[in-house]
Image 1: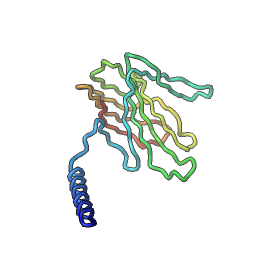
Image 2: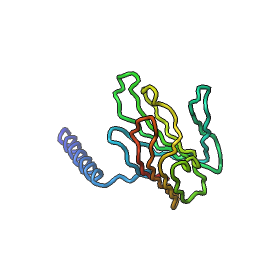
Image 3: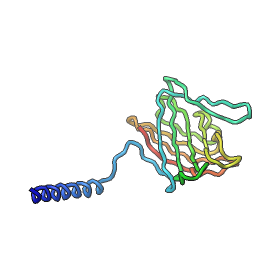
Image 4: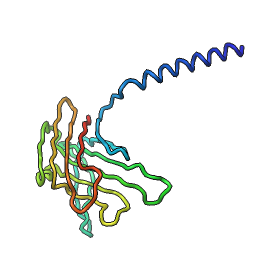
Length: 173
């Protein structure tokens, strides 16, 4: 009985390893493709039938929220730096957001015209004087939509703050 169990275990282990090796040789197929700084993880998202509501608080700082709108969607690209979770106030993230008409097929916007899509840069960190939401008014966006695949290329610069993301390219369904 022990020999049968041992033989079954070895056979199962052999098949498991063979499947693992074959799976690791094939490229991963994913819906969203992006380029991200090596020290973090990036997540592209699309919030369908939403719009960006940009507001200013009593201190003059920008903030935003998403609200329902059947004619527009919000595209987001978030970078989160890998950090030591045992340290307090050690988080760091950058998020780019913009709003597009649901029927948009192609956009090519530059500098001040980036505000036609309400383009924002949201930096969250424990970094005095740099964290917050900024309007992006310097850069270029190329957006195309083909067969439900949204492709985004963006290069931009924010004045008066450091930034990890300066050029991004990604696709999201």
